[in-house]
Length: 363
Image 1: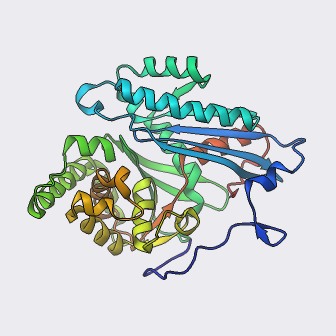
Image 2: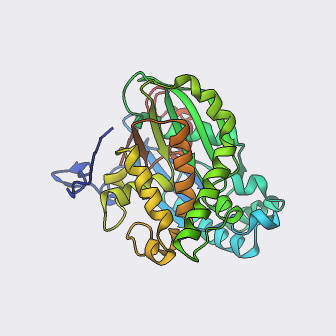
Image 3: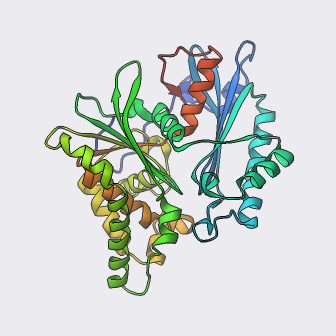
């Protein structure tokens, strides 16, 4: 994992190359596809719909296509208990794009999972039926335990090296998962975990951020912090026994990748610069509080936040600070990978295209 103490302004590291030039998807389309199977993973979260397609090559998985769209599936769910018709329309439209990509990429095996919003909505079955009818995609509404397992499987290889106790967290739209893990060169084991019903969407709707004044924003943020601190209390009690040890912390979510982008002062989001980054925890706290005190307009003006995330990012900051409180590691690892990569690895291992112990992707 790369470590950084302050923004350097240097360009991101280059990706894999072919013949001395940057490797692109067209390089892989031109290769013979005999004996090369492709796999697809769809993660339908409370806020985003995300697709990843990878091809098995030489015992590894090569990502050949991806798609992401903000659908706000959980918008209004906290109050109504239902997914709105507008949110269903947005989601079906996004999944139709995914289905088209699956066909064009001749995907061998795929899995589409839905998480907290569908676990909570009383009309999730209605959404699933419409998705299947209009796109052919079968949604698998997974448990919080399965969500945690897939997230860990997808990102654990970015955990900071060392022997200290390790925690992986996933701040989603409708829930947040914490997983205490043991990571080895070959595998990962989850020893303790918790899922709370607060993500960037659900917490924002439960404890809206007042934009009236700086004092109002500070008070709203303090309330968000209190809500998440209480939700994590049981796990925090179990984490106390690791106090004083060299703790390791890795996050997989839009919150940590967004804050890492702000830390680097990127003009636009760049996965290659962010994935695998290690940011001082104090820097993450400082950015969180600065965003919480900024107005909605000022947050939207930050290049890597924009209007689509400006209203939700503060809730993510509150959750992140509560995690750092209970697991005070010196650094926060950043992973732009998680559930989708976990699904792909599971599918490819079932298809015997990658060894059970192989955990790497190429992009």
